[in-house]
Image 1 (cartoon, rainbow, N blue to C red):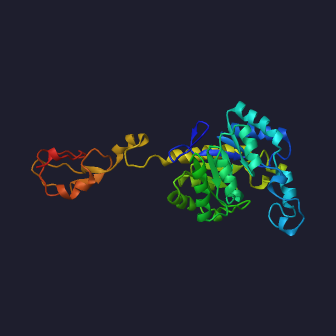
Image 2: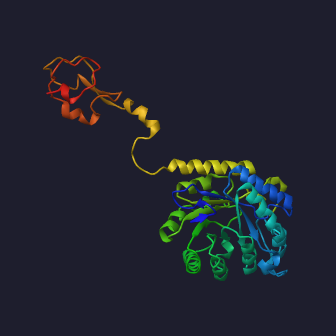
Length: 345
């Protein structure tokens, strides 16, 4: 799978998505600064969300439409999404800024009209949000664009995930990445359940990543070690400024640390194997080997009293210790001589 010119697969550096969400706080200049901050931090992409309150919910005061508990307690859904949405007339300006900074930009559409709008901007990819994973009509609409699709799986069971992937494959290009996700805002690390990444790798023939809502970067780094190909984190300029997602978003320095540490974790995985690495080569000579620990005369037996396994490693390997006991010295072997088979009968 590729987004723009960047490969997303188990052998490539994880693709880092900086999720802006509503952290622009209704200010387009702040949105532009967020894109600049993501580019400086080293993120591969910045992601928007494309909806209006009217395309995502109903303007109702009924209990069904009220948020109780959590970060957004007391809001109606309409109020929340009206506060958090990114105005559609900002999108061209934000896309132009991202192109100028050479950072990918794409979005999560929340209805068919958003897909049509984003197509007019020639987005390189689409993201299906966790809450929309069960909206198979939306996934079909997105898949029919032929663009790569990233899908988050918060709250979804395996059957729902497989249904979404199946529709995306049936109607689209087949370029799909699935993100393990826990839809808690924030998510406690102990509820991250990262081993689900391995389960998804086994069950689905697509790249797997992580959409992470924990505080800090430890969970994302651990996911990288498990083979996550994409890491998505919300970010803001300053948590103290507030905003819909500020409480569980990274600040710019933290985003830069995430990009650095995920790359380092990925590099540390290597390819598997036991060949000596460059940093080891000079140290091989300091492993143990067999040496004469006394002067040994020609014709003398090799015994536990006159040989020893010590550092450095220029003699026979310690595994040969029992094999040379009882052998006879062919010539005088001075103290501290590395043992070798030509010295022995």
